[in-house]
Image (cartoon, rainbow, N blue to C red; front, side, top):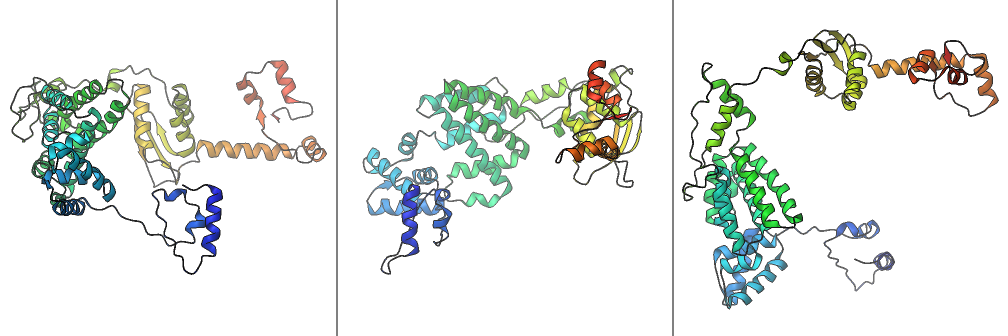
Length: 451
């Protein structure tokens, strides 16, 4: 990019251009161009070339150069170029040089440090089945073959994204950049896997890629990521676990039979099929949670703190060091009704509706008793504790301003302000000694109010 002085010189030329000169600027860092230059130019943002168009362009060049190229090699180069024709041509030039007049998919993958797309799909399938041993063996085979550990995880993340797109937008299967294995098996896996499983897999892979890139031994870090993925893939989602618990016979402690088919961590089973099945570990998990523990609130003693007012709730939150909940109760809750085990309130206009669930859960946890917290719009509710405290401070300040001595002090010192007004009770809460209290109160002030 140009320096500031160079941009200033360019700006002068732009403001007074010669009649025979037309300027065309091209940059990949548009944010670094000063707005004074941008305001004097017409801007055209160039789109990335679609993978299908880019693959066709590369194929045309290969035909003119009498170079034979495999279709999978074309799609691999187009995908790696990410829409850049220049990068695609550079990769093609290297592939032709390495291939001696022909471009094969294997040579391109070796050039880019990639794994076979079909083998990446096999690895993904093993993880989704919970077959950790098979997944580790497949990863080690690809790694020993020259594939980079971080690139393998990146390929898994890309395929996870592809399966998610195919699940949401089936027309994505028509993308010319996809190889046949991606198209067919991606559609099948999109039908078999839930959106929550795919989202969880994407998040774990995204975090795992960063771990591998920062690890001293990337292969070992990648294997640990795959272990986490394989075991997490077997776990049912929360709603599935609840549904299984509801479907259990009350007289039995075991979960009903689940459709098995995965091999868990044992590493057995064939790898040719692509139909996904729930691994047996999910059944064992369901058995473990078949007899749920009694509710926490019911098991705790009933001698917890008694909450008779909203101030007690705030004090309890402060004692538990939950400052966010304390602040929310003080500033957002307009109390309508409070009794043992039940709170009803209205929210301030910009209040957080999740406060209801948070408050109920925290009070149940802290007191050992169940609390029903509800939100109402039928009654405006009392002012919030923050509003009440603000009104009290204003009333105190107005009262102290009426004091003759305070008025004399304020008039004697122009610009002076009353910062705070405290009562004897406030001073006692601070914990001042009697001598300090006398010094703090000053002379000539009311017995009940000081500044």
